[in-house]
Length: 214
Image (cartoon, rainbow, N blue to C red; front, side, top):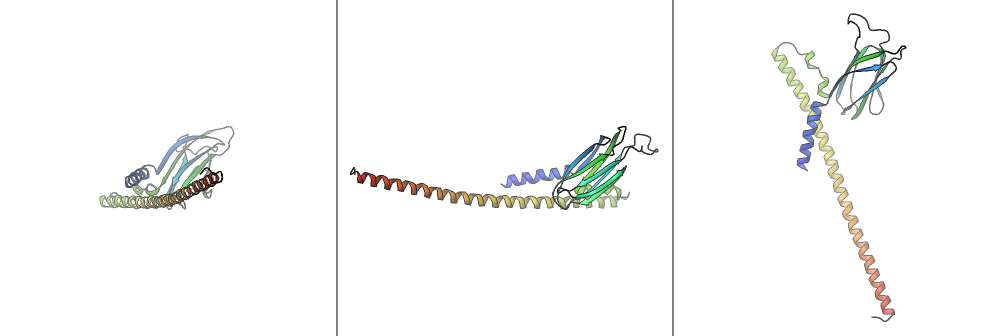
């Protein structure tokens, strides 16, 4: 049990450190929608940003056809971010529950149809704090920033371990309750079998006595 728990904690730490950043670039056609999900734990900070990649020179404005609608929803369907006819934007929130959060981006319908390239970046947990933006050139401040980031990582891992420990206790209690019920059911089954056997023995004995066979 201890080996399994330690292995689970180790795998959970690896997953926590490696799978909390989602950065991608994809294409979407006019009138189409693409949704992206991210598993986030309760009380985790989340930030996201998105923008339409300019198909022309960066100094030229985007074409009028290049607009998107963005919706971010909680596992229960609560709208956390909503933006219409946008070229770029960002969102941030603290997860109120553990579950799969959904971000949907829709390209505004346009005729003739056009293709938009979307750059989307979604970070949660300790990865949501972009320390490189606040760190200055001073080596002391860079070290302080690294220590602060490491401290946030340790706190987050401790919360994950505490959550896993609670789940382990719940499973242990469930197993103990199940074993107790199975033991009681076994005794009841044994009692029923003995009662039936005794009744059959008494019935056969009475039958043979009436027939004067014994």
